[in-house]
Length: 371
Image (cartoon, rainbow, N blue to C red; front, top):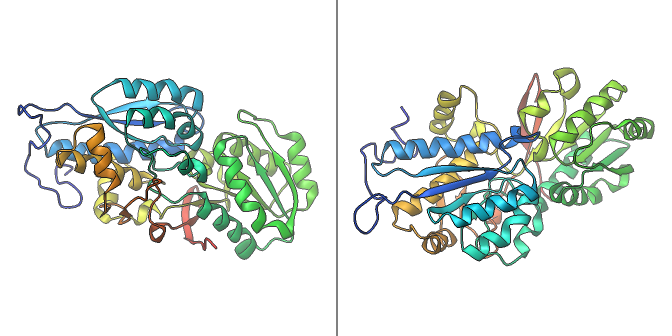
């Protein structure tokens, strides 16, 4: 039953979530990310993990906390007014997200100026920690770990004689691909760029197939990677397609087993299906499917915010100070959530895994060395 909170929280109802006068505080946590659009398949499990934790919390508390959706469709220009709207609602005291690096970069100043704490489950561009934002945190490693790991997977596991590299124009895709490039430089026979929104890749497909490359790294998201891979397969390319966490979603699998089988996606996270049994069972019961990438991370992020509320940290400033000094393992992932002054996790908590498309699912293929 969801009233039995994962992690051993009390099953009886509590009323710690109150104002000084004893009334419910009506606090809100925002979720900012692309809940609709071509890349929603990556974001939906994050939202579901957060919502599951909140449902369990509210079942055990008389005073309820509300989750507010801010659907950016993954676009920085759409995320900016949404961030301003969240800042303007005084009951919003924390943000889960933004989900993607580009929208994180676009909204960071807004959240920082309002002292509204954010914890992203998935924004991995390394330089997001370089802006001096005291409100920024991420609950996974950045691409300084994922990029080299993806490169090593190609060079050490696939071992191609020739490789190719493609990057999109997103903040995430460019940075990730540039970190992979030096690792596979000795076999690299070509590089190319694609644009967000591209759907037809005739010239690029011809270039790749003629290059003789038997492995290709793609830095970017499923919206373009899916049709690109589909067209590569239609042209007879049989090499191994490798991408980062931006393709680790069900929409990538939806291009069909014959085309996606054997594709590899990395993630600076452990498999969500390897999270605590209590979390996996509760998630599966709630959503009738096994948890996908970052669902467990988002569950734990929601726990951080709710733990702060239970500790009486119900202003943005107090909750931010609470998060900045936080040091506790997540009930789902077992990760020790403790951030440095730039919002980065402890290096000892960072892992990168490979996932392989197998029979219509992303199957864990093991941990990858990051150096």
